[in-house]
Length: 416
Ligand code: RNT
Ligand code: ZN
Image 1 (tube, rainbow, N blue to C red):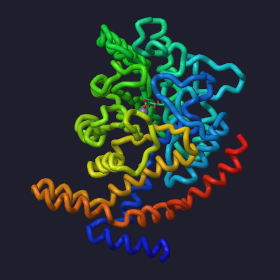
Image 2: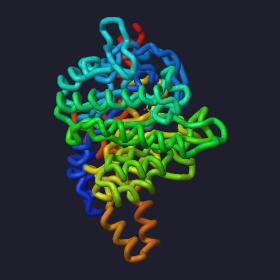
Image 3: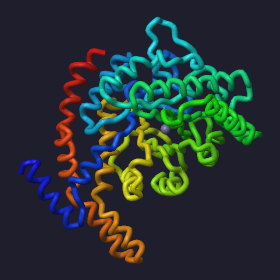
Image 4: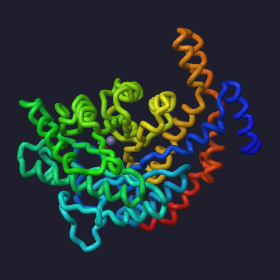
């Protein structure tokens, strides 16, 4: 049977549940995800800063990591050629491109250092997002925006403001608003004597960054919380309560990374809670295995459940989707492709659910039928609709795309 014939059968089967597969494909093709640049080089960046710090870690030494901006961009292009749809690139401040041999300190980075990223984006008609880098730096060792040393804290405030300027530049040049996400690793390995002081300083630092005066139509500032990190097990200043309260009180966007909670907490349950109070929220879609390990996103229960929450609450335009993981033990381009496609597959599956009917069953207390239907729809031919979605985007469907990775590995990555 051809792909078209398989799709026709799938279309009819979904129609029996009142689901329009063409509408689902259309909706999915409009969803843009912000793909993190840092999967391509294990979060190294271009500052030659050496060690990755801040409690985030990559493991593995699969050959072929990108070492130069050209290589990273080439790899991003390769990944995008295997991911249906148009997506943004999420750049970190440590990925500035310095051509004259001098690397400015973090408080002195300027839009011109990111001009090649803008060119890259413009040539492809895509947008860019941005992140200040509050880790992998000597002055980040004992706190950044919470640092009791005012000189160091000022340095990091200047970094934040420099990043807002770069975000404005991204938005102005590309024509797409830029999401600028603030995450700091600040915390303590052991029981602190003062939990409030660092949080008050964090709040003040953020107020001073946001107070620099910026165009809110161009830049969407988000704040990402975290429960703990390696080396800061006892206390993290930017906890969930802190970040959420800060975001809602200042009218910025809260960002949830699903690796940043206690292991029995799920972000899928938090999305609707935040949507009650925030016009927009943002997600870092990742996969934590036992801890915030940032494994490659898969088509698994929790990713599905998160995307269901986005789709059935009609929030595709309110939830900003971004990926955040880094695996150095497998082909890094395949890691991007698998993770991004997994988010898309989860969205598709959600778009193909009889969401209205399921809600009705809940509201009319028909819980047995609800459970039955939730289980039955799992075996509908979502794969045939996925393949049709890929075909319409002119991108290889499943398994076929991997041939291109193999070839790229032999011809491009092997030379590095
Ligand atoms: C770390 C956070 C943060 C980083 C990136 C590189 O735990 O998830 O988002 O992964 O800034
Ligand atoms: Zn994150």
